[in-house]
Image 1 (cartoon, rainbow, N blue to C red):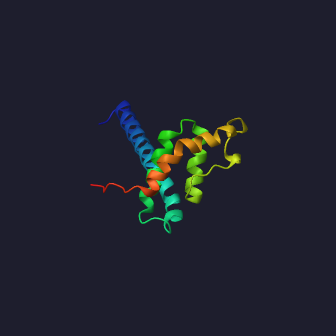
Image 2: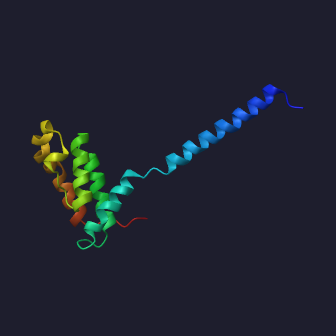
Length: 124
């Protein structure tokens, strides 16, 4: 027969295993930020580009790589996903960082043009 301590240990194992599995499952349900960005951005690109997902994906990657400041990067990504073009509303960044908006557009200008107009390598 089971002793009380063995039964308690078995019960605790089952409870913690279920809890850990539930945490892993809920983590898997979180949206991929890059995928969510492309999902929001692509509808704005459909009329302009043959492969809107590729353009949005390229814009995302260059914005993340070029813009170091997290507030400006988030505002830029929001602008692209909401309008399909790089834009930043003053309300989206703290007042102290608003003077940096023009420099942010300078950083992202060439990569943006490359994403939109240069031929893309076919994916393998």
